[in-house]
Amino acid sequence: MTSELFDRLEQQVRALFDGESDFVANAGNFAALIYDELPDVNWAGFYLATPSGELLLGPFAGRPACTRIPHGRGVCGAAATKRGTLVVDDVDAFADHIVCDSASRSEIVLPILRDGELFGVFDVDSPVVARFTAGDRAGLERLVRAFSESLG
Ligand code: SME
Image (cartoon, rainbow, N blue to C red):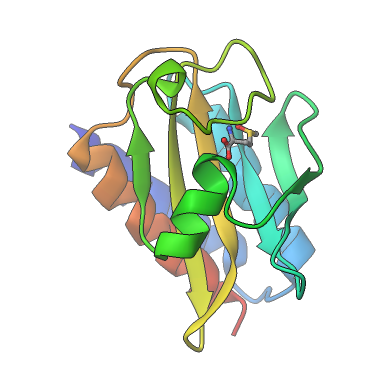
């Protein structure tokens, strides 16, 4: 069931990106689609790597969020440092979690790498504890890869 949903979403993102390689346009559509299509999601969006190591808020859907995340901080910073997907089943149990929306209970953060460099992360929050399964992780990794490829 999860893989059918992600098969459909992958087709949709590839259609949205067809003939378009602009970062803001594709990132905005990507965040909006995930926010709209995944059940029990209250925030979906990008934080972009900066030369100082801070993560800077990019296109997103959901409530206004923290604009800058110091180097290595929060779930986003931990995923960026690790350069690997991080799933947090209960944000209250993750000591360094940064609260942007107090409704968030679980979170998944996927790093975006381009030419071996950290480009940023894609963050999805849920008001439900342990919302993100192994299937969601694999599916979102596929979608993030499609997004990254769209930038050319
Ligand atoms: N909770 C994140 C911060 C970003 S918001 O969830 C939109 C973190 O701990 O890195």
